Length: 221
Length: 246
Ligand SMILES: Nc1ncnc2c1ncn2[C@@H]1O[C@H](COP(=O)(O)OP(=O)(O)OP(=O)(O)O)[C@@H](O)[C@H]1O
Ligand SMILES: [Mg+2]
Image (tube, rainbow over all chains, first blue to last red; front, side, top):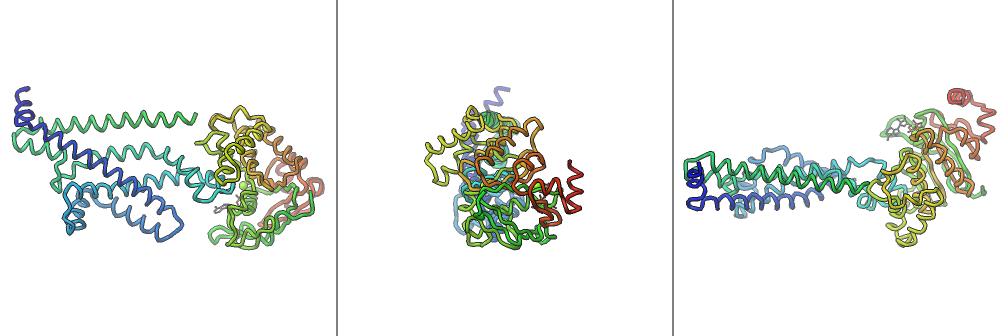
């Protein structure tokens, strides 16, 4: 048992591959959530604006990017959209995940904003606050609190979905596990290692976000 | 009450999304200091009328003039006009993410009408006036319905409005809390505030109103002093309405 773990993971310093893969996984997820959040804020504001063109753009964007399977999107971005630019694979993966996450963030934020009771807007406007002031001082602070659970779970989904990046041969953690399997003919030790690390990541983050949300909720009392 | 007309409504008409007219043709002059109470059966358009006054609903016809400003003119700066028109809602609509003090100071400070310090002082005085100064640093979730509505009233007063609009301010309250809110409104009336109140509290209407409007079928079916309306109703529909509620 220990011998076979040693042979597959430690010998030839193959565990380093796993850690490098983990680094790539986290890098993609973190960069993508940052891009996705910024994009989501902009597109959500577009989707709730009075301007039909802006609303239309937002709707097309979210419909298309949420309607296609992630692996298909990733390949379209790599082999079609960004192909003329000859960008590094990792960068393409980050951009593709960011653009995709942007569509989900948009819907999360839009639902959060529109979920705030209309009476809040009416109260703000009847006090003489402008639409903008009402949005920023009254609606958004409440929306942020409301979307936090779905937003954090979007990040966790993103971490898991990065495993699809191997479709364009990005060396994420799943790919690293797979390479060790190929080199050693041992499937379960490297893949189990990956699985355990994914679980630690997702469970750990869920726990941290839970604590964070409880803190936020308490500030209401 | 003075002779100066504060709000002039002429031939106001309102329909929603091209449907039938909820308000058919309503004209009324509200004078400074006057207390108007609006009554009528459920769904007759009382809220719609009140919400047209501060343009929370956009009228589909007619005009509304407030202190010489034509609110129904698309070029009018509504935000500016609304600063002088307080509104109190059935469901309070306090800002749950802000303390009571912040609820009161948000608008005056954001609109640069008062410094933070001035606004706090004014807010504290207003809270004292309704006996809730100890709630200043608490959040709305810690207040009872009656307390929330009293806070909502002084939140509007913090803007120093020239008129206060009330849409069924006691309808969402437990019966034992209705009195405390009506008392605040009565004090406000005594202090000379111009008020337009939609309510089912007929005792309040009788005591406070200068004029009562009975809305039915999208028009002011009958209007008059509390004595006219309650003791000598002329329209059969008003008679029927009063029989049903009294
Ligand atoms: N935003 C809206 N969209 C469509 N119809 C509406 C809207 N608001 C009100 N209405 C309709 O207009 C009519 C008048 O509504 P309104 O709320 O003004 O009545 P009300 O007299 O205040 O009734 P209540 O005593 O129940 O509060 C109703 O038939 C209602 O369905
Ligand atoms: Mg109503």
